[in-house]
Length: 333
Image 1 (cartoon, one colour):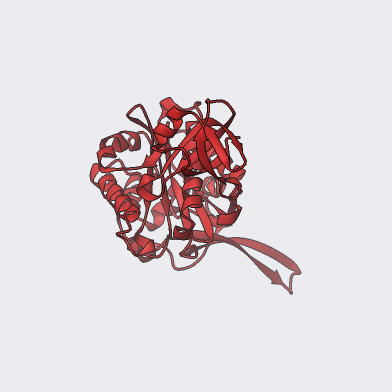
Image 2: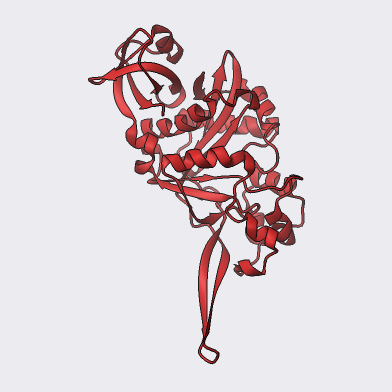
């Protein structure tokens, strides 16, 4: 299995995977033209043809024997080319001197406070690839990409997780809150969020904070709760050092997790080495080589010592590397 940047030839396979994603994936619409545009932006980003970091994005694919098993993405800066709206969770305490009572209210306020932050996301795995370590390889390859391109990314990284949906596939937060502001179905607002400049959010959303206690109980319960299909991703993000902050998605209340870039475990623990000729024995590692369009990442046994990672010839061949080429290695815990 190899992680590499997406190319134009991947659009049909990306469409196949996007169609399996279900509701709420704004970054992976099951739309060939939209996916082709994202691939084109990624290729131009990696070629250095897009100067505005707010317009840049990188699309990665996990490939095995010519078939795509997963998708992932990175955005060097969000909220700059177009707003990156969230609800910010906060508290307000009110005190009555006349009654001696004190009440604390939880508030949701529409903000673009995360502008300038980098983002990792777009993680989608073929159901047939689950249980093979493919998800961890794909997820952690994003951090090794960051480690090899630190100048592209901000000092802080966020990850948005799809929000909770009930057994019928409905979002309680959307049903209890969102649809009262946006007169459309959930699928349509997700589609629009993925292809528009998001001006409609500011134009239609309420101008005042929402008081959480006044929302339907099901909507309150959904705040910061990830989709059941995203539980594994949530755990992997926590293992990397990400934590839920004070921000949630505007439409489904999914959690936004944050981490300082330098403190992401896979970024901090990656070792710079040279690749050497080995016999295929050793401890399991993630190995990343190349830059920009030549970036590759795989998982393999390797002996790592004295600034060298000794790997089998077929691993170097799969990475397109020769002996002595620089790489990042990361213990595949």
